[in-house]
Amino acid sequence: MALQWMILACVVAVEAAVAALVTLPVPRAVRGQIVALTSLFLQPLSSVIPFAAFQLLDIYWKKEHRLMCTSEICTAEERIRFEKSMFKAQRNVILCVSACLLYWCIYRIVKFNKDIKALEETEKRLKEE
Image 1 (cartoon, rainbow, N blue to C red):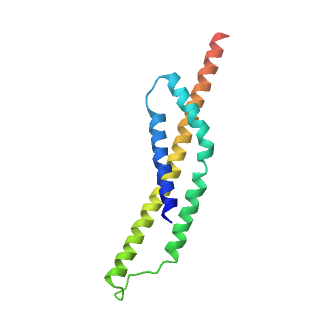
Image 2 (image 1 turned 135 degrees about the vertical axis):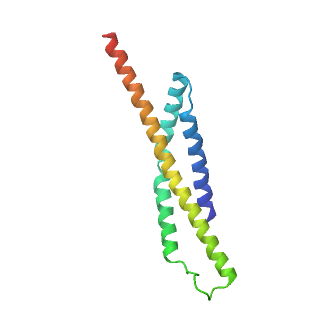
Image 3 (image 1 turned 180 degrees about the vertical axis):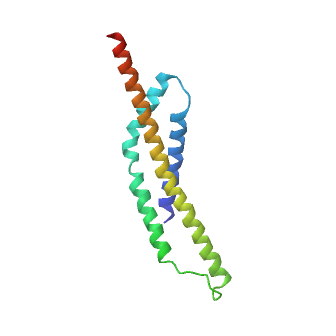
């Protein structure tokens, strides 16, 4: 079960690196190349959204069907196991939400850069006329 979380963690790390790369102040020519390359990867990376949503649903289902250890009957070991599983679930929720949020940020940044480029081309074309 840890493989899916490792994959999602790697995807989040890659998305964070791409978001940092796209937001770096670089010359226009380099920015154009970065945006073009990033826009090519946005379509395959969109599969992270349903994957993260499915993982969130899985976490929710497991939380609803988990044995609660809040009474005095629980042993110290059971209580520690319960708290560990709660911390892992919270960490995984943060991971899923950050994957979706980073994808959205990258998408919006690339879209803004493409819109700016289109507006600059339109302005240049209108000045030539």
